[in-house]
Amino acid sequence: MAAAWLCECVRSCGTRGIIPTPLEITVLSGDNHPMRIAMLSYHTCPLATLGGKEAGGMNVYVRELVRSLGRRGVGVDVFTRSQDEHVPHVLHDLGYGNRVVHVPSGPENPLPKDDLPNYLADYVSWIKAFSEGKGLRYDVIHSHYWLSGEAALSLREDWGIPFIQMFHTLGEMKNQVARSPDETASPARLASERRLLGGADRIIASTEAELAQFRWIYRQETNKVEIIEPGVDIAHFYPIPADEAREFVEATDDRRIILFVGRIQPLKGLDSLLNAMALLYQRGQQDLHLMVIGGQPDADPGEVSEEMNRLKALTSELELEGEVTFLGRQDQDVLQYYYSAAEILVMPSHYESFGLVALEAMACGTPVVASETGGLIFLVKDGETGLHVPTAAPQALADKLQYLLENDSELRRLGEQAAKYARKFKWGRVADRMIEVYEQLAVETERAQSAGQ
Ligand code: UDP
Image 1 (cartoon, protein in one colour):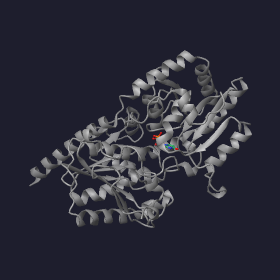
Image 2 (image 1 turned 180 degrees about the horizontal axis):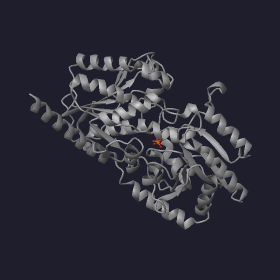
Image 3 (image 1 turned 30 degrees about the vertical axis):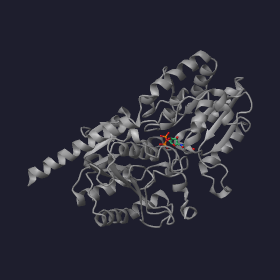
């Protein structure tokens, strides 16, 4: 049985934390959950393999939020587009009776992002039939990314329940840093984001930065916005002694590790880090090893992404082949070793709505050098848990890295503070805040419905 449906998605479901820890359960109510949420994650599955082109922070967010909601007795069905006909349509992989439902909508395989809007109507119809067939009534719809938001608009109309929207990334922000037409957001996406900002019952922003973007870039009223910062699992991401971590990551020489973790996309600004590494090397810092986690550098030549090819070519051009290792995507279960083995985690992104990687590294006691952009400005405390650097500025990045590499005590101080600071970002706290919002909305809807009777 198992082998037939061990697709990307299922194989990667976390091997940790899924089994309920009895002490954490507040209400375990099987099908009698006091509150039931329809969570929409149309384009990507919370169980997908992380670090590829499309699976990263949003998948982790949905997965961890749903697990924490489950611990608090909240029932959740996550509806995602089926990308593999061999995977069962309903999986109970999130614990506490909460399900991931793979919705057949269009061909059941991965599709180019531009084709996805074509199958939204199928997705919505299937979800309606599923809930009717099972006699399910949801209290709130919680949708992620603009495509799911479009589905939420239709479902709200049918079900008469409120919906909460989270964007994770915004098209206008993407356009501000796009370097080529294929990196830009479509006009349909931009129009949809405006519609959703106006039409959702609540909007969740990850940080003050996102709120400011709604207000100043989208010119939208922000009285429906709640700021809820994401979390990090500190039972998994914690400081590991450097010698043990270095052994695990097979750091066999004495070189100091600089680390990058993330999807391999132009938005992540990895080229700035490569250029900064070359500058450091020229300045005599030759005991460095840049480890790059993410993407699939060893895929068949035709399958390696354009960005990965570009970065590899740049590495050769800068004569850094010996100094840079492209490790490819790694299971999240081992990332704590890499974070702990590194002197510094660098997040050179051009735009980042939040940046879970920075939080995970800080939780492991590793200072972060991060671009001064979006959520990273709020997440990484300049001079306290890491350093800020302007975006796309290799010289400035090299300066900051050099400063830290030459100041062991400063590196230690920032690392210790980072670990302490990251502990306040708990998924349990995110779930508690989210439940407050769900409850407020459910009460408001009930009041409006009784007033209308
Ligand atoms: N990640 C992973 N393996 C990889 C690369 C990334 O597990 O090879 C995870 C990482 O731990 C983090 C997420 O993917 O939780 C990336 O989230 P982030 O918010 O930093 O970036 P996004 O993907 O949202 O742009």
